[in-house]
Image 1 (cartoon, rainbow, N blue to C red):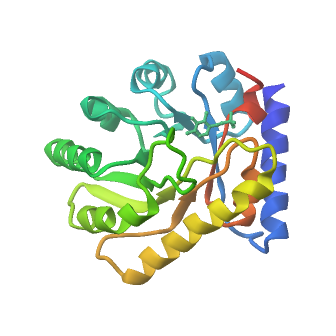
Image 2 (cartoon, rainbow, N blue to C red; image 1 turned 90 degrees about the vertical axis):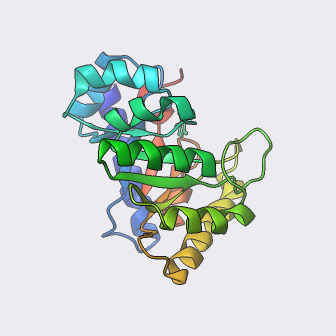
Length: 226
Ligand SMILES: *Cc1c(COP(=O)(O)O)cnc(C)c1O
């Protein structure tokens, strides 16, 4: 049952937070809903899910017209530049800004729409070729660029875990993301906040919470195998 799964995931998040001495921290469960039906999403919402993460603008638009207002919708997948306008209409946060060009397009469209756009920068910490995201050494120039923008509001960092059976393999990656955010925060760039770390999925969300995640993106543990 989806509702039981949501409850269990919420409990596991709370237990991991307590283990790490973060018992009071608010950690947002972002239910990853790519490929899931409206009925499944409704069940998750009924069980207390407040935020869903989608990977494709077109799929999210269809869902948005049904769900409007009942749940926060956030973009967690790779965003194509030609989809920015549609994305800004439906998403409350974009986790996956992964290039200067995409940031520039969001700024351009956001300004035109008179909208502030909260974003996270996606960092490819693991260095896997197949992954989107800026490399850690490219992050400072991108933060500086975004710091000068008017519509784009930087709120933190996101990373995709490498697929690994052992969550301990991903722990150093989560630590590196946290350290990177702390160093950027220490620079005091105007208009840049580093309050959010979006990291951890079904295989490793407890490890991510132990390492400071403020948002975990969980699909399979809630909805089952796709
Ligand atoms: C699908 C997806 C998730 C959730 O993965 P699960 O293993 O099903 O929990 C998290 N983040 C992103 C970006 C995804 O595409």
